[in-house]
Image 1: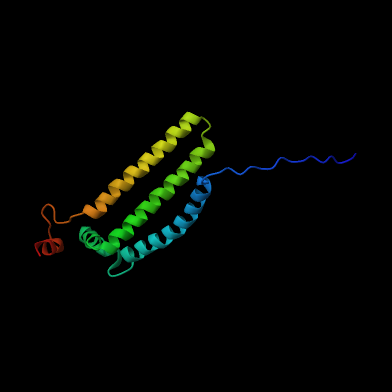
Image 2: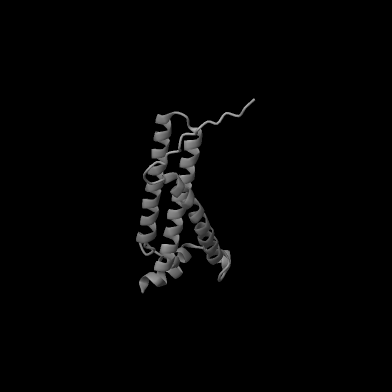
Length: 144
């Protein structure tokens, strides 16, 4: 038998932005950054000072009074939700075979992530521990 040579058609590259490639890169970058943010968050909340015994409403109020910790938590929230939503989108794209169902699920995931990002960001930046009747250490801070 002689080997036949078949001329393969040249592979055409699609024009435009490759969203799957950027999603893949985002997952790697956000995963690394999330590890740093989460372990920093856990270290400060559970190891520094009195450790886990210091965790109460006043501790959280003190953290949210500082712009550094507000932004730390907001970046962690945004990255975690976008990272998770992108992972869920990938799973839906891999396993859902019906086009209508796939589109509906991807939209639902995007909407849920967007709503949680919006609400979480509002909580962090509009948090006021002095609303209501603060007691204990928090009453001293709110009185000042």
